[in-house]
Image (cartoon, rainbow, N blue to C red; front, side, top):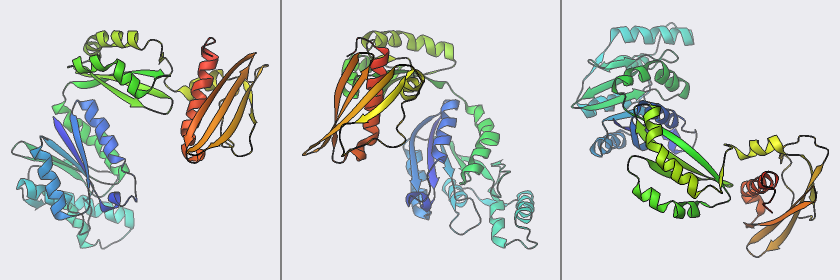
Length: 356
């Protein structure tokens, strides 16, 4: 099944809230083996929302999952516009109206419930209602002409509840082969170089995809394939995995989080500054294991027309490693890069004795 996600809400476009709903729905779709090729955010606008629906189905979606716009106010139009797009009539549901009234009275303590709340009791005939027990607006699944639209509430706690307790079970009837992934974490080699040495493998792959994800200190190589179970996926991935292990054997590390891995082996250390124009942040911490031998971490900084060059010296047990980190403009603007590079070099220094 090809799924497209449409998150509705002008507040999302204004940057007033973080859109966590899309990520949660994408994870659900991955677990069910659904393809998610597009995700759209649109404001509370009649024409633009319907245009988003039209674009989604025309470019191959079988199902569109929406969030937001199910409440009682005039700009909550997602359900109405979804039904209109599919050519379905909304009908007043007495049972749903009773639920809305009971929930509103319970939450507010009001005797008289504002009439606009009962807007939430209209649903297309024969739709599947998604019970929202932590809010007043129930979602629904409506379908026509092989097009499915799923309306979910916008507040994250409500959306998560409905997905976990209702929607996931409903969509399980359409479950397909799911995506299995395997990650290699590499250190000491840049993303462009990894791409270059794996170019032939990447071009040759059909069933197994190879993707690269770069962070400041590492490059993650992710293998992915669709399969009915893990055993089948492992068989598909195995030959590619073996080839990558051969090509990148000098750079692959076992640890999944380099900072945590370093903290587990880091000896006691002193940070010594040989300059007065730069210091690491107060929360800079590589970990302490209270060893008898102490590592000295010497930090120096010199100005450059394009920024600053941070010189770092690692001095421990008679060994030294000296390296420079050029940073554009103000070094504080690239602080994460600086810290990541120090972590990488100290980790190599401690785990690869012949490194320096």
